[in-house]
Each structure stands twice: as structure tokens, then as C-alpha cells.
Length: 310
Image (tube, rainbow, N blue to C red; front, top):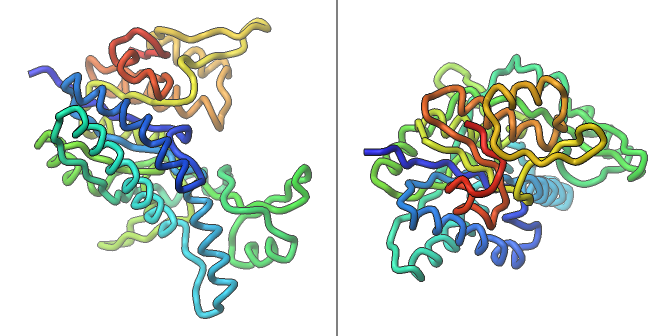
């Protein structure tokens, strides 16, 4: 039987920092997912948690200031909270959309831990902003705790910056596989997964946020999916070439590699999408990666729109 497993990575445009707005926005994501289910794909969903994990971290930090008996929540716990919160909204929206189409399919969220390397170079060069603006006194307190803080001149305040290491392994992969093999819909590795370090038989949360596109590619590879679908706010990826904006349609792996080598992609925004897509396609046979707009999922998987690497 033809492999019809697809990993869908939802970008931040599927969500919101406002609770009511997020419940509305996930309805668009639910329609995109339901379209894929109607096409007889086994769908595994992963998602961004950029604004949400920062919102949770800020809230927990403020709570600890109000009550000295409460400790500040580590990033790993904030990541776990964001997986549960976003998963809850997605589960309900997708279930409702499927039932409205006469489709019954269980939808589950797996709280997912992702192994990272303690010697990953990202820990020496933090790149992800987290939480609210801080005063100089607050920033000094963060530095005393061993956290990295930078001053933002245009904001006249300080921001905490954390590492973004690469994913090595996904601990809940067997549970995810079991659900996918039973043709259930799975939400997993939200926000890139909870970054953890192995300590003998235990796992310790790392102060980091994993780039969700790399985890999506890792998840798709470990499941031997036929496709990786990264849903964003644009129909196509674009680059600036010879002073003009160039739209990227179908790309071979060699073309994608050359564009990366030539430095056409922003290291924070566009590079992870292309690089993760390329790594997934190169790791197996007959694979493809599609990067397109959230509302164009069905057209993207049919090859009618999007930046497609194969």
C-alpha cells in the first residue's frame, strides 16, 4: 500500500496570543487538516509555540514575584504547558471540523520530549528571544541565575535570549507510531518538543527552545512519512536575487543546497524551513517537502502551489 503519512508543521499564523482569537484561528488550521484527512492521508501535526511559550513564561515569572514562595517555572515546564494548551485548542477544532464532514477519527495530543546535545554549539550562541522586556535590575538577576540577557536599544529594555539546539531523538516516538499505525490523528512535538538532556536513566529539561521545523523534519523522518508540509503565511518562499524578488516553486535537492550555500535565506526565519525540508527529503527515498500557506494545504499536497523540494 502506498505510504500516505504526512507530517504537517503549523506556523504561528495558525495561533494567537489572545485566547479567544486563537480559538478562532485554529478553525482555519482544522479545515486544512480535515482536507488532508479527506484525501486519505494519515496526518501527524506539529506546531509553533513562539508567542505562547513566552506568554506562559512571563505569567509564571510574574506569579513568582507576587508570591515569594513560588519558584519561576523552567523553560521545559513552560514548553510542556504550551503543548497542552495549544493541543487542547487544536484537538477540539479538528474534532469539530471532522465531525461536521461526517468523519470520525480520534485526535490525541502527545506531550513530547526531544533529546538535545548538551554540547550543541547553540548553547554558546543563544538566539531565541523569550519573555517580556526587563529592567536593568531584573536583567542582572537573570544573569546571576546564569541566563543570557541582551539590551535592546530600540526598546530601551533587556530581553532574555535562550539557545535553539538541534533535535537528536524523540522519546515518545513509539507511542506516536502506534497511534499513526491505528490511523488516528496525532498532535506531537509541539513547539519543537520539550528539549531534554539525558542523565543516566533520567531526563532533565534544558533551558532552550528547539526550532519546530527541524523537529518536524526529524519526526517525519522517524515515521518514514512520504511528505513534510510546512504551513506558513505565504504561498511560496521568496528570495532577493539580482535586486528582484524571486518566487521559489519546484526545487531539486541540488538547487536547494546551492541556494543555502549562496546565503539567500535569513538564518532566523526562512533558513530553518528550507534546511529542515532538505534534510528530510535527502534522508529517504520518494520523499517531498512542501512549504506553502496555511489555507493552501490541499493544493500544496497536490503539487499545485508552494515551494516544493523533491
